[in-house]
Every structure is written in C-alpha cells, then in structure tokens.
Length: 62
Image 1: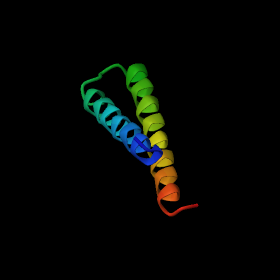
Image 2: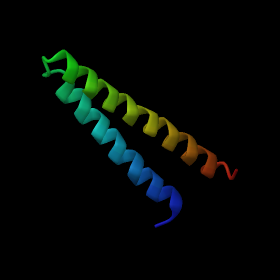
Image 3: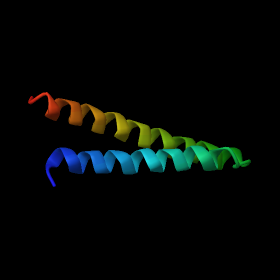
Image 4: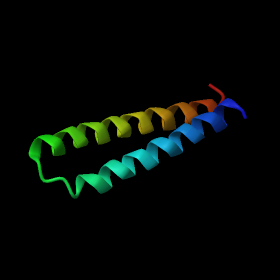
C-alpha cells in the first residue's frame, strides 16, 4: 500500500469518526458535554482538512 492510499484510509476513518460525533451530539443534553463533543468534532474536521491538503499535494507531485 502506498502513502497516498494510507492517507486515504486514515482520511476515511477520520470522516467516519466525525460523523459519529455529529450523530451523538444531537442527543446530548448536558451543555458541558455538548461543548466537549463539539471540540472533538472540530478537531476531527481539522484533521480531515489537513489530510485532504496533504493528499492533494502528493497527487500533484509537490
């Protein structure tokens, strides 16, 4: 498995995790816990963006 495929696998995992945070976020009533889940979700979104940028850069040969 080459590096781009590995990054794509990690990207897909991060997307699934972020979707799980979104799913559970809808059911959380406690404001502090909602804030915590929002931070986790936002962290996943940052990872997703970083992975997408790195994959794009590798595919363009930079």
